[in-house]
Amino acid sequence: GAGPGTGSQPAPVVPSASPKQSSRRVPVILRFDDGFNGLVHAAEYMAQYGLVGYHAACSALTPHDSIRALHTTYGWEIGNHVAGHESEGTPTFLARVDEGSRVIADLVGEYPMTFTYPRGHRSPKGDREMALRFNQVQLTSEPHTSAVSLAEPSFFSGWTVVDGLADAETHERAFERMKRYAVGSTTQGLVPTIAFHEITKPGQTPTSSGTVSWDLFTRWIDWIASQGFETILPRMLRSGCVAFGAPKLGAPNAGIHGWRVARGDRGHRGAWAS
Image 1: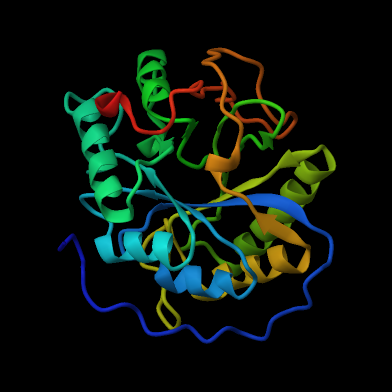
Image 2: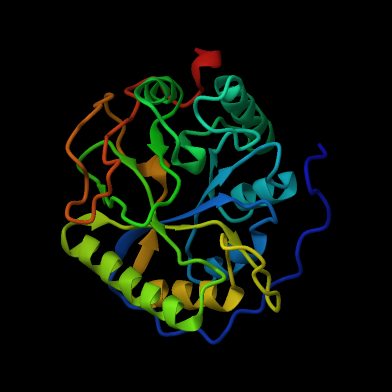
């Protein structure tokens, strides 16, 4: 069915020269919030390395053809980012969360198992409601974030990709920090989470701070592949019980919101299907 921004798929992306991939295999989560301009071009580039992503989609704003293609063609996990990107605490928040899950289920054939809070707004009450609906819950990306411990259920955020409008020197510093975060997490037996928002198409220029240029995006993906990282999806993480105020994950990389929130054995259908 028609959805926001439906239309023809982007033209195939011609990959840049690929670096030699390492035989060492270590996990990483690559997360993409919003995707209001579609993310098929990013998925196609990542696919040359066998990498997949988690897309936190807003069913009323994210192009439906992009959501379908990411899941069906490229094997991405589609999560719920609230239908219209509403923040927790607004009067329609829960209704729009449930709406988002129903639409995503119609598009890809299954209810989302992972939820990502828009704008980082959350509360203990909201956490409890999300724990009834989803196996994994994430925060919008933050500058200081938690890596994921595979031994515990997790409430985690993602390492923020640098401002797309920043200068080249700032981009370079961020690139080096990302490397240290990714490598440091894996040496502690943790899974780094790297979070993007919008990715420009080849030849386009970022027009907002939340948009990453194509050249910067492909450089990061090339490095991730060259280091032997392989992507896992939030749905692969073990579910457990709600644990508010639990110890932060991934210290010393853990952020200020290190609480663990996960549902037990209720599956992923959501409260409306219980």
